[in-house]
Image (cartoon, rainbow, N blue to C red; front, side, top):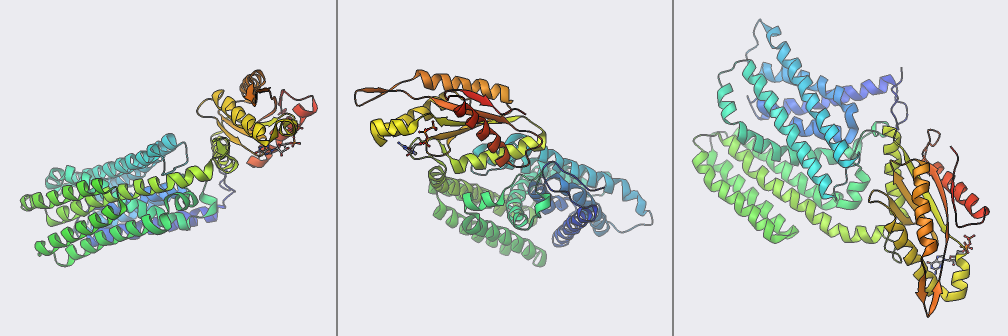
Length: 491
Ligand SMILES: Nc1nc2c(ncn2[C@@H]2O[C@H](COP(=O)(O)OP(=O)(O)OP(=O)(O)O)[C@@H](O)[C@H]2O)c(=O)[nH]1
C-alpha cells in the first residue's frame, strides 16, 4: 500500500521505510555521541537528541516520528547499558526503554501540533508570534524529554536519581537554551537535505529562511560557531575533567566572544545586558562549584549567552530585513500587497486548505473602463482612482483576507475559510462601496465601478493556478454580462 498524504506525491513503502531507517540511524548516532561525550549521564541523552528530534519534526513533519521512536529505543538501550552494568536480567529495562521512546515521540508530536496551531502550518521566523511558538515548542520538548529521562532514571532506581532530581531546574534551564541553539543548527542542516516527498507536514520553509533571515551568511555562521564552541567545551570537559579552572576560563572567553559578536550585531544595549548577566553568572558559579558539577556550570553559561545572542541575531536580522521585505512585498502606488506577496501567501493558504480540507475562496477584481479614465483625466487621475479603490477594498475586508494589486487595474483577494457564496457577499460589499464612492480630482468628480469573479477551492484544483483560472473565468463572465457585478464560478 503506498503512503498517500494530502499534498505530497505518493511515497513508496520502500522509500518510506528507508527514510525511517535513516532517521533512526541518525538519531542513534547523535544519542551515542552525546552519551559518550557526556560520559555516564543518561539524562543528557535528552539534550542534543531533543534538539535533533525537534528539528526533524520541524523539517520533515510528523512523518519523522516512527524513525525517532526506533532511534530512541536503540539509543536508550545503549545509554542504559552504558550507565548500568549489564545484568542477566536484561529484560528488566525493556518497559523503561519502551516508555521512554514512546513518550519521547509523543512530546514531539505535541510540539508538532502546537506549531501547526500557532503558525497555521507555516513557520515564518520574521513574525514574533512564530518565533515565540518555536521557542515555546523547544522549551516544551526539552522540559518534557528531560523529565521523562529523569523519571526513567529514577524508575530504574539508581543511587544518583535523587541528585538528578535536585539538579532538575538547572538541567531544565540549560537544556532549554542548549536545545534552542542546537535546534536552529540542525534545522538549518536538515532543511538543506530534506527530500521533496516528505514536505507536506513540514512548517519550515528553507527558501523563506534563507531569503528573509539571511541565514546562509550571518545567522548560520553564528549558530554554527556557538554550537561548535559548546561541543568543544563539552569535549574539553571530557578530557580534562579535573581542571575546572581551564574550563571556567574557556567559558569566560567564549562568553566574551559571544558578547563581542552580539554588540556588533546590535542592539548593543541588550547585548551588554546579556553579557553582564552571563558574567554575573560566572561569578556566582564559583559558589555553585561545590554543589554542582563542572559540566552543569560549563553547559549553563555558554548556553545562556548563546540563547540571548541567537535571539539577538534573529531580531537583528528581522529588523534589517523587515524594511527590504516590506519593499519587496508592497505595491508602490497603492501601499497594499503586490502580486508576489499575494501569490506566496495564497500558495500557502492553498496548501493548508488542501491539507486540512478547509474552504477557501479567491476574488479577482478588474476596474471597469479604466482606459477611459486615463484618457479623460490623465494618468494621475487614474493613479488616484487606483489608490482610492485599494483603500475601499481593504476597508471591506477582515484581517485574515489579503488583497493585492494583481496587475495594472486588477486586484485579487484571498479569503481563507470561506465558501464561494460567502466570498460573493464580501465581493458584493466591495462592489457596492466602490460604485457609491466618488473621487475629487482637478475640480471634477470621478467615479469608477468594478467587475468581480469569485471561485472556491475544489478537489479538482491541483494547483493555485487552476483556482485563479476559475476566478478569471467568472470575472470574464461578469465583464461579458455588462460589468459592475459579481459572478461566481460554478463548482
Ligand atoms: N493610471 C494608471 N493606469 C494604469 C496603470 N496600470 C495600467 N493602467 C491602465 O489601465 C488600462 C487598462 O485598460 P484595459 O485593459 O483596456 O481595460 P479597461 O479599459 O478597464 O476595460 P475593461 O477591463 O474591459 O472594463 C490601460 O489603459 C493601462 O494603461 C497604472 O498604474 N496607473
